[in-house]
Image 1 (cartoon, rainbow, N blue to C red):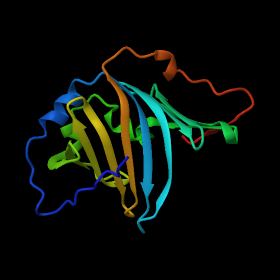
Image 2 (image 1 turned 90 degrees about the horizontal axis):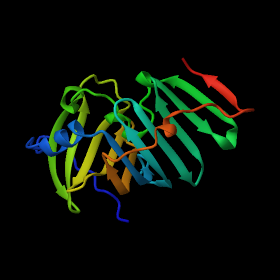
Image 3 (image 1 turned 180 degrees about the horizontal axis):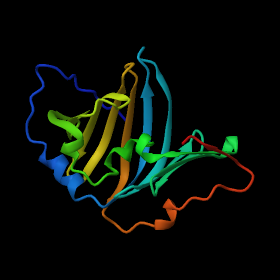
Image 4 (image 1 turned 180 degrees about the vertical axis):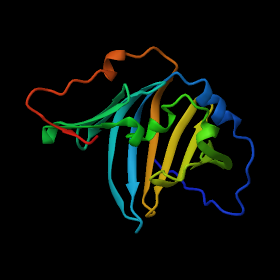
Length: 199
């Protein structure tokens, strides 16, 4: 799988039609897929990748499960984000409003995407149409978010943090607005694990 290209943002970036993205998110009720996540640090060094699957149900719920090379589950529901690390026998609980948690978390809310982010279309690459998102609040941990779309919807996301580290997430086996199992969003810490409350 080829690495997703990051488009430079600058004076030559031309804002154009972002309606394919805004309409997709506007009509989005549920979204599930498998994912491959890769990280490249500011020195250009590739970190070990991870794979897993997720289910999003708007508003306010997601299940994001890393399967390899380690197991970790992130469950968001009722304004709470649970992070379960079986290897550490630990669960962390925090307010979802303060931590979107997983990459797909930017789609949790009911507000139109353009109300939360400044949007621009930044061209096409590898058969995908790419869009740039900039947090209007300036409070995001990321300096840049890019979304790649094809005819089926969101195919890839690229996050660049304020230190220049880049995370790329590519989706496969996508299902949009299909029925999902609500039990995925109900989480009770297993017996015997440490529960850390970061409220």
